[in-house]
Length: 87
Image (cartoon, rainbow, N blue to C red; front, top):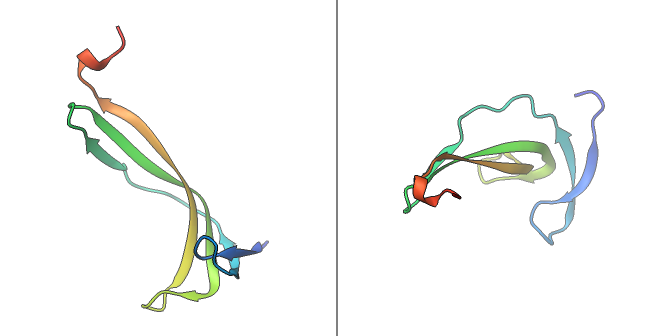
């Protein structure tokens, strides 16, 4: 963990600021999820982690450190009824 980046961040919106350290995202895996809509459309939704922060003195009920994740959702249409497409 060379070049450690620390920052004061809030575990919950509006909460007190706490010390956190940025953790590099090494890899992501998975196809995401496939959402089927009532009109027959199928959307593939895949999250992508942009940044991760680990709080230094904040832990869950199992003793695991709390993390804050900045992510983006990418959506693509996997299947659609031809009637819904623009002519």
